[in-house]
Length: 460
Ligand code: PMP
Image (cartoon, rainbow, N blue to C red):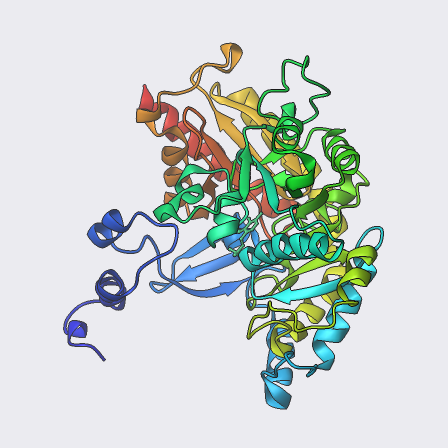
């Protein structure tokens, strides 16, 4: 017990220790040390979480869009316990293996589209994307095309926080954090809508993926990375035809396509994988989050048969490995998680609940004048706030519109998140656990409704 514990509540004690010792990720450090934690989580059950004071909140974003089976799942806990009491951890280096990793790889392949037939495991999404970038370059080297090194990502994409994945992230704060940019990663200005640019005469050509590939020279480009639905960058759902156009563009220029499925994978969008919404098969798929519903860290990269077959011809050590690649306990949780996902029909539930979310959005748009651009694919949903949607006029950034609504929801015990890294854009994201039902969605939308009313009063 620390000396701070004398005469103060547990919440205060944790807050003081937190401010002193714990540096938080993706948090404003100065504000944090001034104000301390917003909430200290203590328990979770289904859709709900409790803080150290015993107050209950609805988890409207599945924490970081990862707790897909909801909180407090006993079956996942038991899978972890069973594996840990057999062998908690074992190495996958130097020829060693374990049954859980093998079975999980087989299971993921069985769910994946097309010929995505082999898996490399990582500890999370950033490592998955790093791995996809490296394996894409390695593949081209093995094919005698050493110059193919560059990776192209699109604006508003989020791909992680390590050096290469951070550079691929088209959100300023991450893209150039601490000068760690990887010069082989090129961020296309391309928004989802102008990636289909046909040729130089197309008004959308400038800055499009096509433009970047052609400027850099396809002989220098290893891969393009996209999210089927951009999450952190603002819940931007790929327009119909977009992913297919990117796939065709990659084929035309002999460039590999990486689909970042870290959020979309395992049912979030109402299909097993995001690309399944448009029947596109990438060359790599990055996975994490929903693979274990966040019950422990795990990620992976699915790769095509062609890439796998090329890789396994290599007769020296593969100089890329993480201590926790193929972690048996993580893989045991992953296997149980996927078993429950299928057994309980949760991918279909995500699709069914999309309808309820859209109904909720219709209600909000009718009632609240600033609500606009509502969208949902499965249980990945968002809406925007504008000063005047009829003229597409944004709120001034000084208003902090999305932040106010987010706070008003929080005051009413609903956790959402803003996705407003872009200037002049105010987006709120909703992504509840895939176990959500109609009553839960009604509750969520009732709270947002009240929060919007409070927001309107505040800005009057
Ligand atoms: N890709 C996407 C689409 C993500 O949303 C995230 C995490 N939010 C990542 C990659 C990085 O994953 P991790 O935080 O597990 O490294």
